Image (cartoon, rainbow, N blue to C red; front, side, top):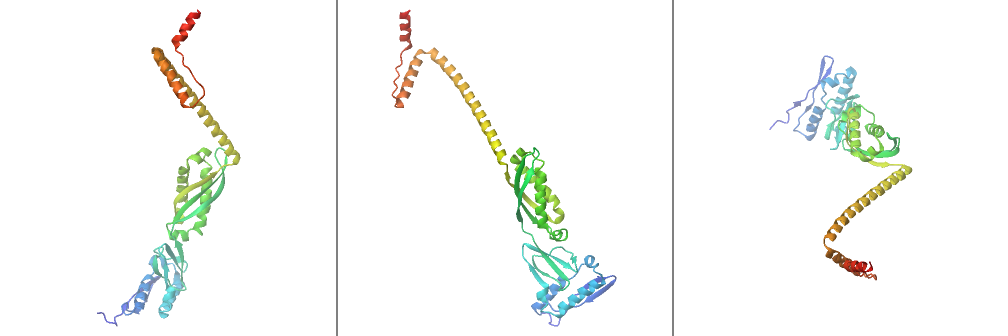
Length: 312
């Protein structure tokens, strides 16, 4: 069992030129939950050498004063120092205007110094937005209105905060410009038929352009392509004419196939005279099944030939 008088000494080394300042905090981690929280907070507050070496003498004085103020005013100051971010959020900590080394903090608890530290929360979830309808002149001089949807997320919270003022607004504006530029190099037929290829091209372009902002474009989709009313009528007339032409071709092919079949059937009937009589009977049966008042009497060809011979 450790003694209650046992003191854990946590040394904070702050570089200021070539001098070293040591601050000791006498608190035992096991004596109280407050002592454990203070030790964890002190360890979190330790500054990297390469990042804080540029604070300057006045900066070091402010940081040390803020740390001493935090220790003296315990336990009240602990509520000002410990912050919480959610699972889908990250926190970027600024100490005297400089981003702390180590990047974004979170999720969970993190420690900040009062008066000298500030932080910005960044949402890491996927965000979707609609691209407003854009009036675009295609390569073949046709005016169309096209809209779409973009899905993106923050991949690097530090770049999203430090490199651009508003990453969401910039991504929206860039998506509109990219849609106009990509579709301006396509024909109307390509826009209507190659939507997947156009969406993939837009995604690649947006992803490369937003890489320096810490943004990852996950998906781009073309929602709707609206054509002028006159162009819709012209395309409908063209499609109707094409369908009529195909119908005529199909009908002509059917007539040709039917004539070939009739030719073959005539050859078969010529070889067997009784086949013609059977054909007469079959036709009569078909007419009678339809309840038709017309009556057909088949006459044998031989009788007609006898009558013709008698007249001669």
